Length: 137
Image 1 (cartoon, rainbow, N blue to C red):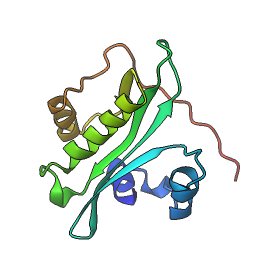
Image 2 (image 1 turned 90 degrees about the vertical axis):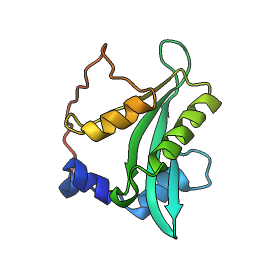
Image 3 (image 1 turned 180 degrees about the horizontal axis):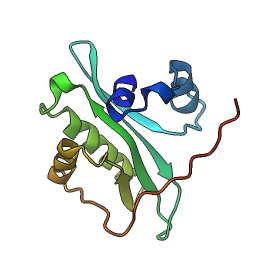
Image 4 (image 1 turned 60 degrees about the horizontal axis):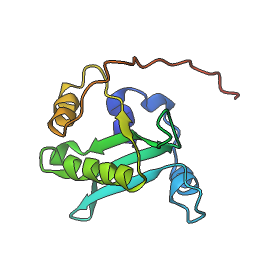
């Protein structure tokens, strides 16, 4: 996750810890805030995907939001990203989701080509907006 934060330009604001991941998604409590998939090879983490659900939208079906998909540069093009993305798609189907959504950095043409090759398309109906909220220190 730190390598993705560096690639996307927010490493200086990155605060996720291993205990945060365990507490919020990997604990056995049953109220996980996200689902995660990892790809390993030769005993090393090669990539990961993180997704969460919006319980329902206009069609009363969940929407899966792919928050992060990252593949180590050394193994890109070897199918790792395909397998991770497929796992997220299957997860969406298993929860009867109506839609899978994600964001791509504007200049990340390689990611755009990757997602297009898997059937993804740009959302022509919506623009991504944000409002930064102050965080109490």
